[in-house]
Amino acid sequence: MFSKLFCLFLASSILLIKEAQSFLEGDFYEVPVWTWIGGAKTRNETSVFNGDETLPQNEEYPGARAGSAIWSDGKGDVWMFGGEGFDVTEAKNQADPSLPFFPANGDATYLLNSLWKFDALKRTWRAIHKSGNYSDIPTARHHATACGIRNKFLLIYGGLGYNFQAYSDLWMFDFQDSLWKRIDFAQRNSSFPEARGDPSSWCTGEELWIFGGLRGNSEVLSDFWVLSLTSLTWSQLNVTVDMVERDQTVSISHKSGAATWTVDGKYLYMFGGNVMQNYQHYRHLAKGLTSDLWQYSTESGLWSFVTGFTETRHPGEYGILGQMSSLNNPGCREHGASWVDNDGNLWLFGGEGTATKTIGFYTLTHLLADLWMFDVSAGMWTWMGGFNTEDPDVFYGIKGKQDVSISPGPRCESVVWYFNYTAYLFGGLGHDHNDNDGWLNDLWIMNMMNSSSDSLLFLGTEEMPLSPVKAFLMTLGIIVGVSILFVFATWGKKCCNLPRHKPSAKSPAGFDVKYSPLSDDTEFTIMSTPMKDIPSF
Ligand SMILES: *[C@@H]1O[C@H](CO)[C@@H](O)[C@H](O)[C@H]1NC(C)=O
Ligand SMILES: *[C@@H]1O[C@H](CO)[C@@H](O)[C@H](O)[C@H]1NC(C)=O
Image 1: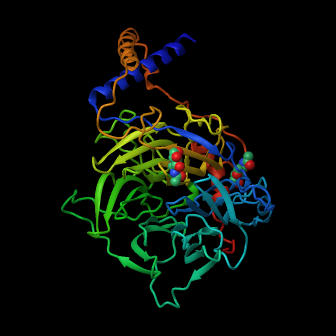
Image 2: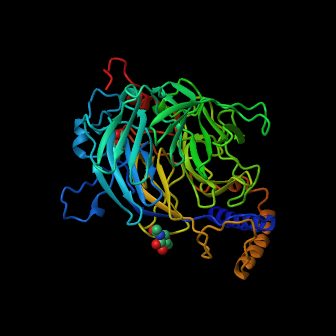
Image 3: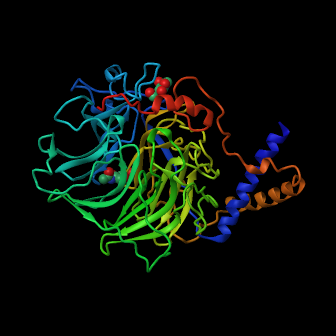
């Protein structure tokens, strides 16, 4: 009891010292605050559909899913297609039991092809159509790529189907007649990229750019293509790395699952992802994960290495919360959520990889819940919130209520969009409020408006004004912290690791997707390794 108290006391003193220190060093940011605004805090929820036209639209809500394709038109209409998870309850029973992802307990995750629309002005969801085996809509898949032109159409390219069948098809959802149309490249006598899922992708207005991705469940690609949204033709681009500006020894690699950002419609960025061949999506192995940041200029046509580590399995360097530093770098990861704010900063939340732990070749990835910002002009990363530990606990708080202690739980394969100074984070594969692994359908927002309110993001390199209360607390913190450090210098070793969240040791029975203990992987493998004799979907 006593030691716990001292631990707490020491921890808070150290935090105060850290805060004082970062103040003295200048340049730091107020960490932004999340609010949980929709969906469930439990895993595996199914969709709420509204068959009755007289009911308010806001009663519709998508079920839990991961790896969906998302496109936001920038004016408040957001389109979400497919993914893996739960849509309608009946479809659970329709899932083919011979499929490799059908768990023995009768609960099936399955691939989706439902189309959902989020209205960012009203913050409501509407189902455009459900998932199902219909010939006139794209087949069910995850890790497809979405793009579009406002008021005209949504495009869905490629993705991975059952048995990791990769698709190369391009579908257009026409907003005028609300119908899907398949673009036939053979008929157009046009070349097109080979089938893939999970490439890096960028929408720059009238172009969709893709780099690499997965050819099925094994091979990782490194080709680079651009689709003109006006002529609907693909062209392949050379991958040329600018050797003048940057380290000449670093080269761009095959990649899947990287985080991507588009800045000013002309700079394409990608971070991390998997670079290793023989990739197995459902194994969640850390072996091929990197933490390198790359930039492509659509004007010069050159790639350049920005910062980070191209070698695999590099743990993160968090530095001090809210303080920018050239030493900071997120840990290696794939399937993080990424968005760009109004000032052109790159944001990254979570993913699967490692925070600070050194991880082995065959170690399972950990789920992350850390928030990062990369300032493009300064060329540096800042740890902006969330946890610098692997698999931290999640705290949802009260729906709709903003609270500094709230953070979305650790997750990967979420979707994110940005509208009106607000980042929206939806679902993914992660830990629910009971710390169980599963598919999620929670919706989170983070207000990123530059505002005087101290709960909001402070952007700029000027020093924060030091309030008298803060100054007093810092001084007190330093005095108390130093004296306690002095007294407990010999005792405090364990204590000083400052575990913000204890690692979860629970190991529920069943077929949960496990991230932490390697021993559970055997069970997981049985369910997830595609069996040879299964006819492809
Ligand atoms: C959640 O979904 C996964 C995947 O189907 C399944 O293994 C797990 O048992 C489900 N858990 C619950 C509580 O439904
Ligand atoms: C953007 O958010 C602000 C503040 O919440 C609100 O007043 C404004 O109406 C919003 N604008 C749009 C286009 O939704």
